[in-house]
Image 1 (tube, one colour):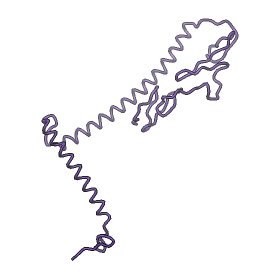
Image 2 (cartoon, helix red, strand yellow):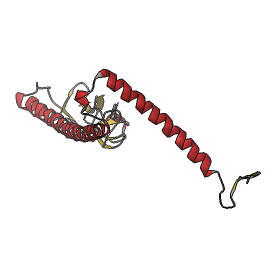
Image 3 (cartoon, one colour):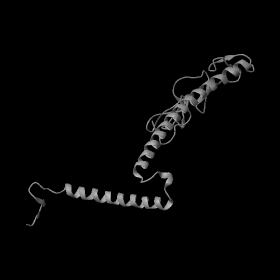
Image 4 (tube, one colour):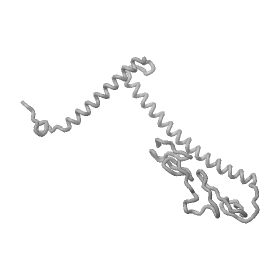
Length: 183
């Protein structure tokens, strides 16, 4: 599908001008951050902080965030272990990887459609021109452009005449109300 404005934040164009947004994002082009903390669903046991495309949980003084990252428990705050830091980094990298893969698929599809369109346009140009395009001189291009303008003008005039002709009632050999053919 082709979206006039590209989908943002890992969103994918699924139909013309309609994006399917990654979790945490909304809006027509996935440009609006969803405030997960205000959805009415309890995500954190104490405090919820909205972040771009996601959220984090927090705890009041004296409590620490548990291993699930959502509930608070009593205890001394321990600095995060390198394993927990690494697991968060891996989780975030996985999300980014999926979003990038989705964007690459979308871009490949758009490129394929663009190449097809360019091939069709090139074939049409070669069929219409009296010689290969690379052999045309600038003055020949200007002349062909002028011819194209004249053809477009004549086409508009023919269309206008066809519309007027459609208003004629030729069954009784008249040209319309109050008009008749002289013999």
